Length: 166
Image (cartoon, rainbow, N blue to C red; front, side, top):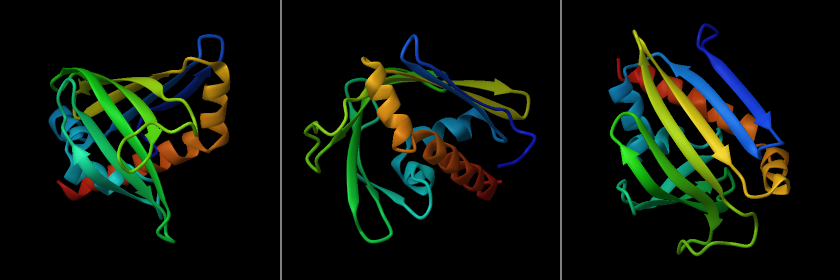
């Protein structure tokens, strides 16, 4: 990670939320595109050596992203993000959940609500992500699975993608 970029990761167990604030050295248009276009998402979403592979992507209110996190041995973990509201280059909200390859929710772990916001800050963009869980145990399971480490590693991948666009 570029050491001069803002990073905050806060767990609020009382309110069953995770707050992530991260700065990226690119315009809001480029950062927005990286979060909302499958060709770009696939380049950074998974922590290395894992890769994200999209089966379906329909970025619109009522649409979804169905994807697999593919491991180095070919193992797949499926997830989907159901888009609820979208304000272009400002924010979107979604339900994120584990599922099978057809998008059917799994019993593995309940999903979480995401609110992802984008704010231009001179020559950079600050992304705020708020994850809200129904149960504290769901939040704790996400953390035990390595959500923090994996998400922060993916952000480093995003830095590389954004650098390559300059």
